[in-house]
Length: 424
Image 1 (cartoon, rainbow, N blue to C red):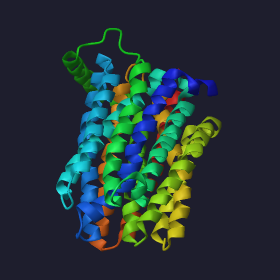
Image 2 (cartoon, rainbow, N blue to C red):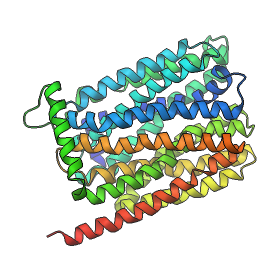
Image 3 (cartoon, rainbow, N blue to C red):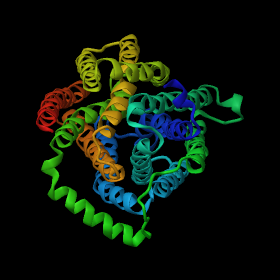
Image 4 (cartoon, rainbow, N blue to C red):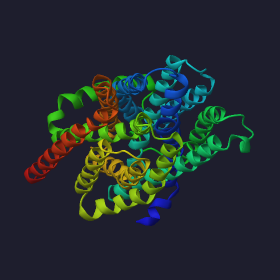
C-alpha cells in the first residue's frame, strides 16, 4: 500500500498540495492577516480590521461556492478537470503576485486581489480533490488523501520558514525592510504554487467520459446532469447528511486557520511569536496527517473525524481563556495534531461514497459546502467581536459550529447504516 504513494500520478497529484499550501500558509494564515491589519488597514481599530478581513474571506468564498457544482458537472462531461485546475491556478497565482503592488492604506484593493486569489485557490482545490479518484483506487483513498495533505503541510511549511526568515533578517536577503520581505513573499508564493502544479498537469491522467464534449456542450450537458442530481437528491441521503455535517465542522476548522493570527494580535501577542506558532503547526501536521490516514483504516473514517472535532472543540474553549504566548504555542501543537487529519479523512470519506463518473460534480458540492462555510465562520467571529467588543467572545462562537457538525455527522452515520441495511 505504501508503494502506491510513490506512483508517479499519485506523487504528482500530491505535489499540487505541496505547491498551493504555500498560499494557505504564508498568505492566508500567516502574513496577510498581519499585513492587512498593520499595513493596509493601518490606523483602523482591531475589531474593524477583523470585520474587513472576514468580509474578504466571505465574498470570495460565496462566489466559488456558487460556481463549484456547475463547474464540476461541466468538467465531468467534458473531461476538463485538469484544464480547470490549470485555469484556477493561473488566476490564483497572478492575483497573489499582484498583492506585491498594493500600496499602504489601500485595504479595498487588497481585499479585491486577495478575494480573487482565494477564488483561484478554492477552485484549484475543488479539481485537485476530484482527481483523487483518478489517481487512486477506493482502498487507497484514506492513505493517498492523507499523503496529499501531509506533503502540503511540508511544502507550505518549507516556503513559510524561508519567508519568515526573510522578515526577521531582511538584510541577509538583500532587502531593505520586513515590509519589503512580506511583499516579496507574495510573489514567491505565486511562483512556488505555479511550479508544483506542473507535475500534475504532466503526469495525472483523468478518467474522463467515453466521449468528451467540447467546453460549451459540456457546460450544457453538465447543467442538465446537475439538475437531474438535484431532483433525485433524496437517493443520496447519506451523502447529503455528510455534506451538512461537513459544512459546519469544516467551517470551524477553516475559521480557526484563517483567524488565529488575527486573534493573537488582538490579544496583544508579538507578531513573531504568532508566526513561529504557525510554523510549529505546519510541521507537526505532517506526521499527524499520515497517522490519521492509518487511524481511518483501523477504527473507521467517521470515528477519526469525531476524534478531531472533539479536539478542536476543546482547543476553542481553551483559546477563550488563553493569556500567554506559551498558551498559544500549546494550542498550535494541539491543532497541528488534528488539522490535517480532519481534512484528509473528510475528503476520503466523501470520495468513497461518490457514484462513478460524478466526482467533479460531487466534489463541487463538497467544496461548495466548504466555501459557504468560509462565508459563515469568519463573519460570525468578526461580527461577534464587533458587537461584544471582545475578540475572545468572537473566537468562542466557533464552538457552535463544531457542536452542530458533530451532531449532523452522527446523523449521517445512522443514515448510512440504514441505507446499507436496506440494500440487497
